[in-house]
Every structure is written in C-alpha cells, then in structure tokens.
Image 1 (cartoon, rainbow, N blue to C red):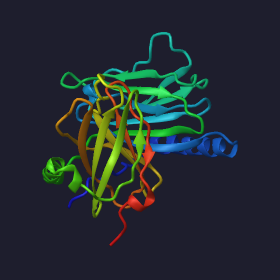
Image 2: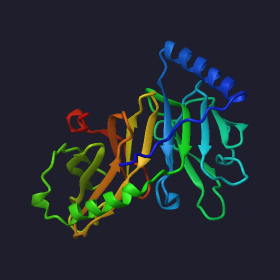
Image 3: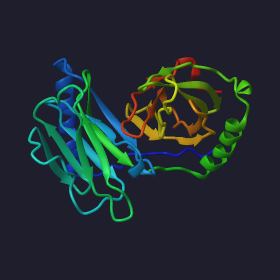
Image 4: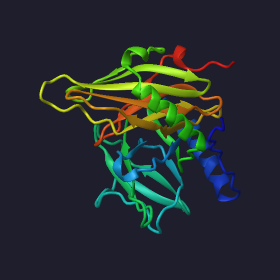
Length: 284
C-alpha cells in the first residue's frame, strides 16, 4: 500500500529566523516550568463546513506559529470583535503568529475564522487554554487521501455488514460518555499499518436519540516529534432506536507512535484517548 506522506517544506530567509526565534522561546519556556510545547500538523477534513472546528492550544507567553498549506481566500484570520487579549501578527502569505497576552479562562473557547474561497466553507478554529500544554507551531495541510483508501473502505463496509458476534478482533474497551450516551470502541483490527475499528454509540435514557458521531480523528507522534492529527474514513451502519454502529479505517504514517483517537460530535470535537500500546501495530 502507498502511504500518504506529509513532509515539511524548507524555505530560506525569514522562515529560518522565525524557526530560530520559536525554538529559543520554546526552550526558555520549558526551562521555566511552563506547559509542554507541542508542534502539531492538522490534516484538514474534506467536509470542513459540516464538522467541528479544529482546536489550537494557546498560553500566555507562548507565540503560536500557524502555517496554512491549504487554499485560502485573500483575507486574514478573524478573531471576535473586541478580542484584545490575543494579537494576530502576519508573517508571510498563509502564515501568522498568535500572541496571547494572558491565558484564556478554563472552558473558554475563542473562535478564529478564515475564508477558504468561494467553493469551500470558512476554516474554523477554536483557541483554548489547557493546563500543561501549548502549541508553538500548528501546520494545517490538505487531506492526502490516496486510492488505497477506496479499497480499504470496501473492506470496512464488509466489516460493517458482518454480524456483531463475528467482529471479535482485539478489544481495547475505551469508553466515552457524551451527554446521556456512551460511545465505545468495540473492536480493533490491524493489517500492517492499516487500522480498522468498530464503534458503537448507545443512549442510556429511553426515548432520547443517541449522540451523533460525525467524525473520528487519530493523533500520533511522528519520528521528528511532530503531533500529526488527521480525520479518518468513517462509515455508518444501520441505526436502531437507542444504538448506532460505525466502522472507521486509516493508514498510519511510517514510524508513528502513541496512537490516540477522538470521537467528534456535531457541536464540539471530542478529547483524545490513547489506544493501549499492545493494540498498536508492531514491525514484521
């Protein structure tokens, strides 16, 4: 199978200086006992208008470099009117610095919006402050789905149609609880670096509809230390009154470590949960 790859582009001049400044800032922050600084790569979903915004973690004293490698309109990112706590500094075409003067209140989410052109909805982000972590660099790239995903989807549909009693692969049993529903990863199947997983959503309260799962995202650490987050191919099965069933599939990048997944609802992204280490693929 051909793996999708996301490789950094090296640009001379101001990019080298900016990278040096961010590295010095990061080292100083970590020595002072501040939050863990992260470099993240976010793969943009194809249906951006139908899914929750992507989250960016900000913290006082940490400049976040945002680099967009996707088609965008001629405008600049927009913060809410009157938002004075966060400065937005243009660096180059498609790149900006976020400079927060203070931490955001716990639970607060500040929207950041950018027009993506007439044929696509706006790019939407949520700025949040979380204890212990902050993003020093966020790179947003286009979905690099390959033809292999179509073949994998065919197999995923077969798994979705298989009677539940026969889907008995390795079971991590991670449980989430959005509202009155429980979303559970029922089973995991590895084929090399290709992952298939079955997810069920159940509603505990009779008469209520189950929470709607609209997207599954995976997150893994790349060999260079960058946290890669990407949406996976998600297939929905038949829904019952109080239960839904889904199957998702994805190909892990070469050398990826610490696999985590998040289940997203219509209104907000879900938190990441680790898959047990024994569930991850091992080299042949």
